Length: 324
Ligand code: NAI
Ligand code: MG
Image 1 (cartoon, rainbow, N blue to C red):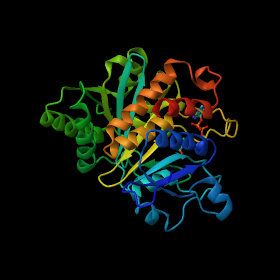
Image 2 (tube, helix red, strand yellow):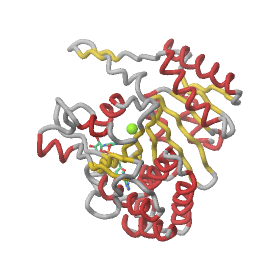
Image 3 (cartoon, rainbow, N blue to C red):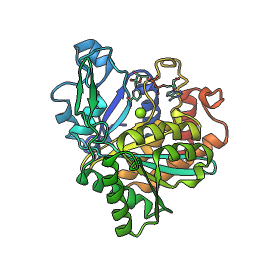
């Protein structure tokens, strides 16, 4: 389906394990939706590491920067003490500071907006025999730009919940203040909530939430919790957005336990592809994909992780079949 000369250039990182299985499904659905994209295959991850000793090499980022965005499957972490996370390298290298994770299920619909470049994942760390430290860095600039993203989303929805731990962490008083000021400026209704209370409320009363904005580590943990609430990791998409580039990926990993069996749930990858189309300004096509996914879920055309007996391919074909 690659179409030379198209204006929308997508770096295609299928990755390892179930990555290629779910990305092939997403490609079939994009083709059925009539998406006009040029794909540039880039091999990153465990397979590449096994062949060459490196999961990602010099030059890969330059090639990726010739594209508008990345469609990413998942990669297996190589068993190498020298290994540096490919995803972290992409997030840093392309300054993908906003991690947008929508969660939906019948009667449920909320979005987690996670800061993606600082906080507990600052990389400022020290490990000695007697003591280990990680510096939690919250900056004015980092908080402001994630708050702006969250408010832009919340302004089209109901409200914003700022999740933090400012009763204990000084760094979060800055985050909370800047998010609150930004919400005021946008005239977005907002509340704030301590992260432990948010973790509890997500389980007890997830309908309470609409748009959550939070720091890196809290967002990482709360979004896996949210995936459990809406039915599983295989369902959930994500967008990693910067001001120039973007990366779209299902939130699950390479699932080595089911890789090669043809039963991986392709929905997270297909929904990620729909988010990519929306980012490209193709909201109509994105919407038809989202609706086709919902139709398949409502009709029990699902993989074993959701209690069904369809294969990855059967689910993808059913969804693609709704679009042509
Ligand atoms: P995982 O997300 O790969 O799997 C966790 C559980 O969820 C497994 O039981 C798996 O079978 C199931 N699962 C995941 N995706 C599924 C899907 N599409 N359909 C049905 N079931 C699905 O997490 P795990 O096992 O902790 O990590 C496996 C590898 O993936 C590791 O090497 C890890 O480092 C890597 N990883 C990569 C990520 C990425 O590339 N973005 C994210 C998370 C983990
Ligand atoms: Mg995670």
